[in-house]
Length: 362
Ligand SMILES: [Zn+2]
Image (cartoon, rainbow, N blue to C red; front, side, top):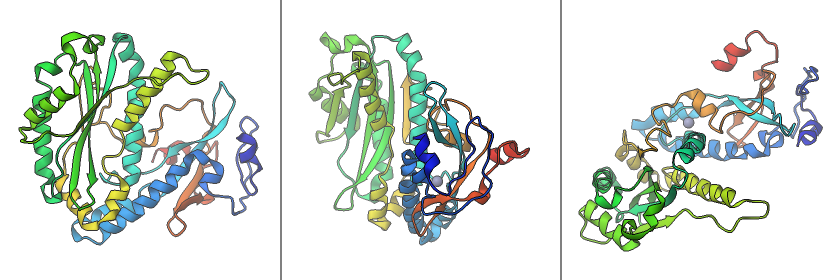
C-alpha cells in the first residue's frame, strides 16, 4: 500500500519520520483521491449524488437554500497521513472538511451513518460487559404504502404505534433498542415507510413464555397501529454464520451483529429514490421536515448521541484515529464535471506551519 502510494508519479508527500517534504507539485493523470486512497472511493459516489440531489433542490424555489449549502458540502477535503503503530501501514485519514448538514444530502447522510455506527461500536464492549449473555433481534416493521402526500401523517401513526408497542407486556423483557425510519419509493410513486430496529434481549427471550413468535409480532404491530390489515413484519435473531477460517465463534457473532448494525443505521432514503422522481423527492422533503428518524431506548438510550453532531464529529465519522500524523494536510477538491476528487495542492497545509491548527480547525 505504502509503496504503491509512493510510486505514483507527480505525488508529493512527507515521508513518515524522514522529515523530507517535496514542495514541487506536478499535476498528473494519477492525482485522483482514489489513486491515493482506493478506500475513499465512496467520496466520489456520494459527492456525485449530492450534485444530483442539489440539482433537484436548485430548481425548486422553496429549497434553493438547500442547494446552495449542498453545493459547498465537502468541497475541499484535507487528509493526514496516518501510520498505524501495530502494522506500520500508512494511509490517508480525513482531518478537515466542511459539511452542509442538509438532511437528505447524500454526503452528510453517509457520514452520519458512519458516525452512528462508530459510536455504537465504541459503546458495545461496555454493553456486552454489563450484559454478557444478551442476544439481538433485527426487526422490520412496515405499513401499507401510502401516497407521498400522506407520508407525514403515516409517520405520525407509526411513531404512536411504536410508543404503544414498547409499553406492551411482550416487549417488557427487552433490554434496549435502536430504531430507525427508512422511506423507499414504490414503483407506482407511493411511499413505503418502515422501521428497522435492533433489539437487545436477555437469553431467556428464546425460552418459554417470553418468546414472541412471528405471528405474534404481526398481531402486536397490527394492534399498535390500530390497522385493519395484517402488516408485514420481519423478525430474525442476529446469529453468526459458521465461523470463517481463522475466525472464533465470538468473532463470527460480532460480525453478524456488525451487519445488523450497518443495516439499521444506514441511509434513511436511498439516493437512487431521491433522484428517480423530482416531485416525489421534493414532497418527501416537505413531509419529513423536522421529523426524527432515529430513536433509542433502554440500555441503548445514549449510545448514538444523535443530538451531538458537530462538523468535527462528521469528519471523524470513520471511528477514532489510530496513530498520529505529522500535521501536514493533503488537499483534494471536488471536480463537478469529472465527478471525482482530485489533488488541490494550493490548499495543502505543510507540517510545522504555525497556522496548522487554526486552518485545520476552521
Ligand atoms: Zn452535505
